[in-house]
Amino acid sequence: MAIKQVEVPGIGIVKLYKRRDSRSIKISLNHSNEVKVTLPSWVPYRAGLEYVKSKSEWISRHQKPAPRLGQGTQIGKSHRLYYYPAATANVTSRVTPTEIRITHPITISYLDSAVQTTAKQAGLRALKQEAQVLLPQRLEQLATKHDYTYQTVKIKNLRSRWGSCSQQKHISLSFFLMLLPWQLIDYVLLHELTHTQHLNHSPDFWNQLESRLPNSKQLRKDLRNYQPII
Image (cartoon, rainbow, N blue to C red):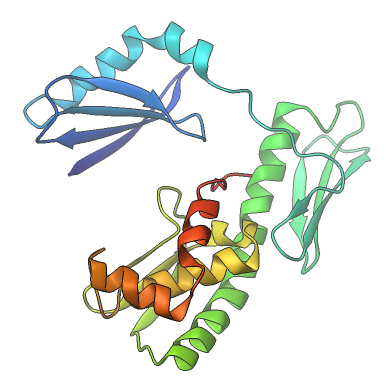
């Protein structure tokens, strides 16, 4: 399936997906307010973008207000967010091992869009830092415990999936996993480790995962309640 991503002024991120089984252009919004467009494989991308622009009013009505990050918000496993008004002209950020510090002009509120944007960007850095330390360690522990092997693990900014595993046993993990409870993180890691032996979601895959994690079916359902967004 071919995918193209474009930022459209006044609308935001638009992701266009070409599908062989699509017969018409369809539009939807995901949890991050990104616009998803599916179109037949023979339709040019520019036609999909024109369709999006024609639906700009519908998109505006259905996009959810961006969540605001408040004082003391916990982000990931070990970071808390704090705002510091100061006699400064700029909004700046600093990520320590335990804090996300946002300094902003005393003349504006922490709810200002520029302050919130900086806070979210810093939050992403904090999640990545945590994930790079914690996820490879936990993956190795689970692999050793359940007798799996893999080649490499990479931490990425994945929003459409929590993780992936290639045919060569290279595992990629989303740093948004740090937003999940540990039991769901373990579910995702074991899911990808199981793919080192079963690349597809065959009955053998699910049976093996269930044998390693007896409550995996319930955890899979619970995972649907979480979104890769701060």
